[in-house]
Image (cartoon, rainbow, N blue to C red; front, side, top):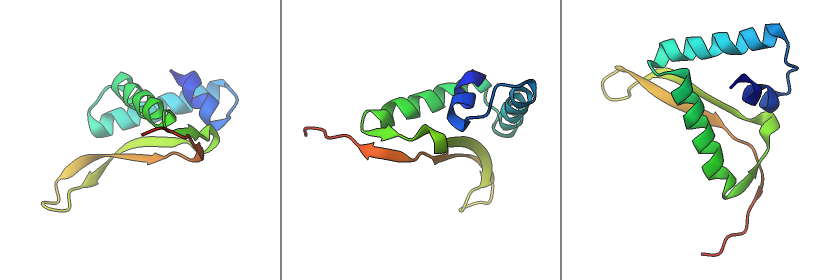
Amino acid sequence: MFDFFKSLNGNPKTSKNVAKERLKLVLVHDRIDCSPQLLEAIKDDILEVISNYAEIDETGLEIKMSKTRSETDDKPVSALVANIPLKNIKERKI
């Protein structure tokens, strides 16, 4: 699971970086009340769908889940924040 993150941000796989990624996942899990496995599945699905339409520049890829406030009633809600740089849009027949 953590090799995926390493390949995206280019950080070498050191104990420090692995621990940092694990801590990030634990914090995100606590904030949004969903398992790290579910977060990883969501990220994989998003990347798979987008890669059907465009070539993704994985060096700048960033997908996060966080808590924010609802605009209507100011209650906390989960939010998916994604920065997915695209190298090239694929030609598709409609």
